[in-house]
Every structure is written in C-alpha cells, then in structure tokens.
Amino acid sequence: MASPVSINLAFLPLKPTGLATYAINLLPYLRSLDPVVFAARPQAGFAVQSVPATLTHEQGRKGHFSRLVWTQFQLPSMYRQARSPLLFSPIPEAPLWSGCRFVVTVHDLIPLRFFKPYTPLWTYQRYYLPLVLQQAAHILCNSQATATDVMDFFQIPARKLTPIPLAHDEQHFRPLHLPPRNYFLYLGRNDPYKNLGRVVAAFAQLPQRADYELWIAGPMDDRYTPALTAQIEELGLGAQIKFLSYVPYAELPTVINQAIALVMPSLWEGFGLPVLEAMACGTPVITSNLSSLPEVAGEAALLVNPDDTAAIAQAMQRLLQDPSLRSHLQTAGLHRARQFSWAKTGQTTVELLKTYL
Image: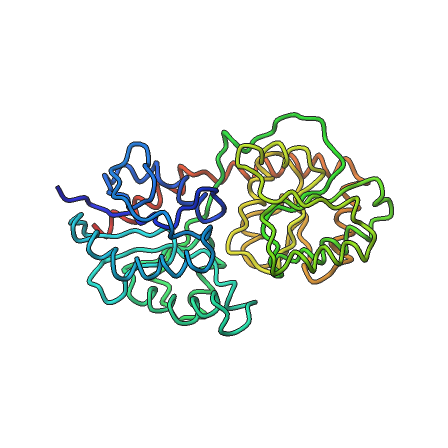
C-alpha cells in the first residue's frame, strides 16, 4: 500500500536536542497524512521502516558521514518501496539526483557565518546544502531570519521558501511556582557563536557577583569548553559558575523556572528555542537584538547588542535591582509564548505538505 508521505527521521538521537525536539513535536500532527516513517526506533502510532541506529550526531563525525551516505544510496530505494509521492525531511538532507521529490526544513546557516572554511560543517553547508535546496520541491524555514539567509547565501527565490516558526510544549514548559534561586542560566552548546565568553565576562562585572551563580546547561565540547573553563579560572569564578552538561528534558522546566533569568546573547540563531521555553516558564530573558531572536522574543525580553559585554552585564544587573522589571518580563513572556504552539506549527506544515501531494 502506498504512503502519501515518507518522513526521514534517521537523524534522531537518543537524547533529543534542538533539531530532534522540532521533529518529535511536529510528528503527531503529521499523522493525518498517513505517512511511513524511516527511523531507528519505533514511533508510537506510525508505520516505521527501520534504519541503522548509527546515523546521528551521537556517533560524532562518523555518524554524520554515515547518514549522508545512507541518505544518498539507501534512502531512495526505501522511498520507492513506500511508493510515496513526497519525502519530508525535518533537516536539510535528501538524496540528490535520485528522482525523489522532497521538502526539507532549514534551521540556520550559522557554519557559513562563523566556522572556518573547509571545516566539516562549513563544507557541508557550502557545497552539499545548496544542492539539496536547489533540488527541493519546497523549503521550510524556522524563522524569517533563516529564510532571508537562504535567499542571500544561495539565491533561492522567495516563492520556494515558507517560514514556519517553532514552538514549545506548553504542558511541559510552564510556570511551576517554585521558590527562585540565585543563578542566571545559559542553555545551549558551548560553540563560540553562542557568545558564552561574553556571558562569563558580563557575570564577572556584576557588583555583587559573590551572591550569585551562573549555570551553563548543555553538552560540553572538547573543542570549546576548555577555553571557557580557563577564562572562568582566570576571573576567579570557579566556585560560582557551574557546568551542568546535558540536562534531561524532564528536568529542564525546573532548572528554567528557578533561574533569575535566561541569558542567551548569541551572535546568531536560526530560531532560539530556549528563549521561547524560558518565556513559557515565566522566566525573564536577556537575548540578542539580531537574527531571529527579536522575532521570538518580541518586546517580552531585554534585547542587547551581543558584542557589548557591558550591555549584557547591565541587563543582568537591572534584573537583580528591579523587581517590577522582573515581574513585567514574566507576564510579557508568558503572553508572548502563548502566540507559539506546536499545533499551529504542525497544522501549517501539514497544509504546506498537502499542496505537494
């Protein structure tokens, strides 16, 4: 029996992060398309065709490379066996020159902005990605900022792009009414474009920093974390800055709820999911005034120039000194977060995919 849509989830890791969170939350709304799913593990309520469990970022570069090889040489035969007229990939990967008709989602072009030429991710986006986008029937983007980047970097026409914002799980990320604690929170990877060095430097500028902590939640990285730990030791902040490493999804709402604020002044983001999740928890947010972040935060966060350490520190200090500002941002953030939902994202995605069936 033919399936109207094939969905490629070969990239899903055991421990979900940004891209996997998008796919997992989108999947329930795609059920109405009666799809077949290509995945390494069962997906409740879906017909699944099994793929190797070694095609994710959890296997490092080998996992990424193996997935690209599998996508090019194995995925087309599975697509044809499913007799689907369309392949949907929640990441921008699809078999090239294969006769497969596909729609993909682009999340950001950060490697092209910040990574050194000919590093693996730069090479992936510079040479592989444009071929995928040129051959795609249509391209979803997680923000207008990402759509603009795709047009600017690759000269893809606007008619081929549809921005559909991400969302949060409102049953999961919500106010828990827990007693506040004394830490600022950063949530994400340790990559340089995340601007953690300036977050650490800004924390060091707080007049009463001895009374507070900075918690860095997210997977550590041997390429980048040592420079941060060296900076922290040099500033004498080893006792006040904590690396939590990966925080399980079930524990995130508690960690976010009890923070003074989320501090995420990235140099660039494709969307910025932690900003939305923090607002949904009623936690004040300090974030950047560029890329997609103003699209997500609106007027419900303190927007700062991410290149200005003093501005980041000033925003942190304002939240410590001004209870009325904290209260305003909590209320405004909750209101802003309600404008985003996975139902809206999912239904918009389904309607778009239907136009290609």
